[in-house]
Length: 197
Image (cartoon, rainbow, N blue to C red; front, top):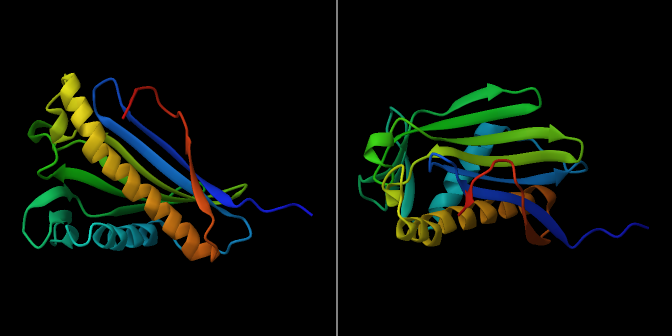
């Protein structure tokens, strides 16, 4: 009898691309034996709830009628601002995209770049749940030619927080759908070339 593993894997890559924008992707695969009744919009909804819980209300998602913002606590300060969610069908599932359009944590000259994608896709092993941040230009990096200390500061603060929040989120979703709580094992993947953060 085959023994079930006492862990599940969460794939992860976080890099600075050649243009010094951020690419970050994390995913988990729910086993084929697990019934999954969720699409990418539902995954986004779970993520927004998780953000507020995980940060103890320090970051609060807010829909302002023209899009979505991650605000600092109960203030009106948008840390990140996004256009309204756009959902589309893919060949294997669904994708919901939030396009970055501003916020305190974005370089002012790069407010029209970057997006956060939520994907739910069928794969041979089961259902893959993915979060992908691409072409994001953090204020902490300062510009297209960040100094070594800016990269170090970004790596130890914002990049680390994003990684931990996303990994904990995917582990929580895994538990929610499978009903089991195995340990998570983070596995590095290399989809794109760049400098690790």
